[in-house]
Length: 328
Ligand SMILES: NC(=O)c1ccc[n+]([C@@H]2O[C@H](COP(=O)([O-])OP(=O)(O)OC[C@H]3O[C@@H](n4cnc5c(N)ncnc54)[C@H](O)[C@@H]3O)[C@@H](O)[C@H]2O)c1
Image 1 (cartoon, helix red, strand yellow):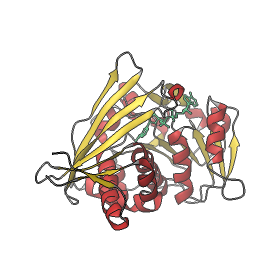
Image 2 (tube, helix red, strand yellow):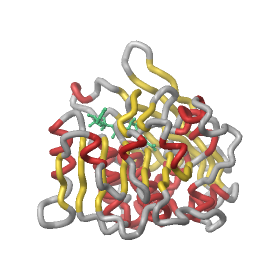
Image 3 (cartoon, helix red, strand yellow):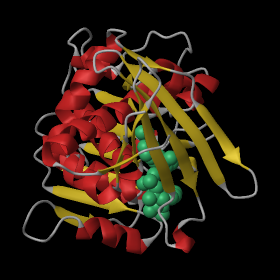
Image 4 (cartoon, rainbow, N blue to C red):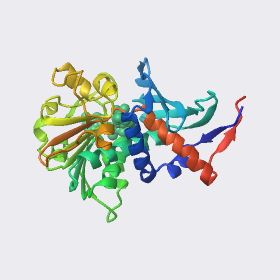
């Protein structure tokens, strides 16, 4: 059996940057809209006794001939153990034989692939002149999403709110003074959102952190924290005022932010829906008016991890990174 390539987190951090991930995922979202990327049913279940969510996301990239999965999830008590809440591992196979081709850390892949999707959605849906961003939830994703917004928009000010002050400080540290946007610690979620052009929700809780009345016309919202049944970050009233774009209809309506709007009969589960892939392919409009509120519901799709993994394999080959292990 051929050897399996092992890539660790620091190698993946070197290989997978927003610069390479944004164009790779743009291509992949268009392929997904065309049915050339297959997503298999998601496993996402509570880990009883450990305040954790364990999941498996798997799929098949027909264009790249890559099949595989990411397994892992989210453990609430990890911070106290010196670990990030999110933990995952990516495993890829040769679709022609089932032979494993690569095993890699999934944590950086999750961070950068999710950030790249935030960048794509903001570029497609936010007003291009957006300068003020609000981040609600300043953990791993809040920080990565703030960086993603700066990658595609002329952001000059980031208003950051978190229940934990040191997490705001950690986000702030990712933006050194004088080298980019100013980061302001907001006293409340409402204060952070007031006057913002783009809002990111990445708190991942079970009660809204963003309320409809706070959102002025013309704002774009990137909703990233709701990716499991029962989570909610945004008051469902906002769905009555916003143009909704989802990463995937089934995931958005069952495990995404849209699930609560469906339960409240504000959004019909049978649509019509617009997906990010359709917008990126130019098949459906994104933002049509400057005063429109746009809302992107990101749940995270298997193909995003596979695209990242497949790209990492080819970049690692070019740069001689990683090591090979024989399993059989
Ligand atoms: N959509 C996707 O593709 C995707 C990808 C990765 C993570 N996620 C989800 O995003 C969420 C955040 O993930 P993370 O890795 O950044 O977690 P994290 O623990 O690093 O960060 C979460 C942050 O939110 C803060 N927070 C919690 N409740 C809050 C509230 N009410 N108001 C303000 N801040 C609050 C926490 O203090 C923490 O700083 C999780 O729910 C995770 O499952 C989604």
